[in-house]
Length: 198
View 1: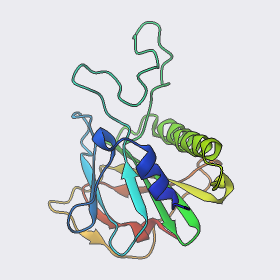
View 2: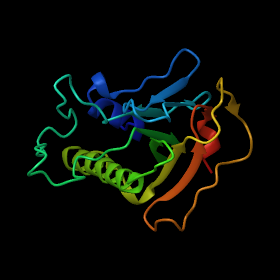
View 3: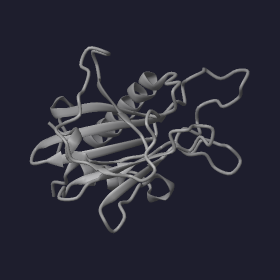
View 4: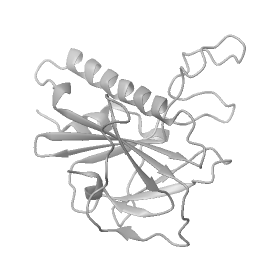
């Protein structure tokens, strides 16, 4: 049986704590786990889209251990800095045969190494696809057919209450990095996923 790419990721990734599920209004709420970050949340409406999966690997347990990459060295003195970097959320959407992967990061004014975080998450998604392609003999995901997009949500104008953006389309900068086009949008707002789709 052939699954959509969002279905494959939903089956491959453990539900708790990684899945981000939509509410009754088909809205995904993406939250920044760093309490010092002023860009605390963004909402993405997936209404009228039937093949979407959202998850985050940016979690630590109560002891501060990394859920997603526990095998990487966490010792402050001997670790390789940045190796365990990850972004806030990943949304995978499939429309007909076209697959879109949105790598999402929430940042305050200091954007830091967000591009590195997004690129590392792209590697992680490709890693899952490679494993699936090895273990599944009847169906192969062609990575060349997947369109990756980065979205940086930043604090600019803070809304008191969220409003759903309905205007045109997000503007992705193709020149910032050759391997990943990036759009920047204000956080603390609600966007339709279609706003980021071509």
